[in-house]
Length: 243
Image (cartoon, rainbow, N blue to C red):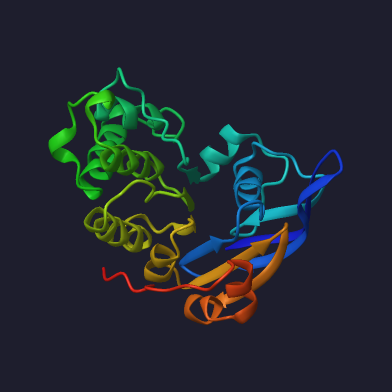
């Protein structure tokens, strides 16, 4: 469970997050909001890259406010990035293996097994020896997810994992995201502009608008909320994305 209490982030006179209090306790939770809503800032606070002016954040009952990013990784927080962090000169295996150094494995055999399983889970076993610069956009995004599954993650945060994917590729992505809690027991926090992806994956969704909570609840109900649709300047169409 993610518990956020009175969280405020301030950059000069700007508050991209302003007094946010929210509990996210469903297996897969989503976050949407118009540009400038504070989505990336919130993710960076959870990751430890941004220090809030006030407030606190806890994950599964443990307060993480003040923990360095590498300590959060050891605790079990994982994330992907909008711009993938895949090294072009390393193989897929080497890219994923690099995360194992921070995951607290007691021996290399266990680390290698986790890497092998994560790569297989996202469907890239046939690409293990391919260099990063020879992976497709979809494969790079899936490699990012594999990296986030190494070790024993408690919270997997996915930042626009479907960017640049075709409809067929996105359907595969839906299956991967929905299966993560069963695969490793982690809660998933999905941030994306693709509302159809959010609708297909998330049990609950929160909406930010100018750093404040606009809505939170079951995803279908939230997406039908007139205030949410107004924030998106026109509403949503074609939300159905079959798994």
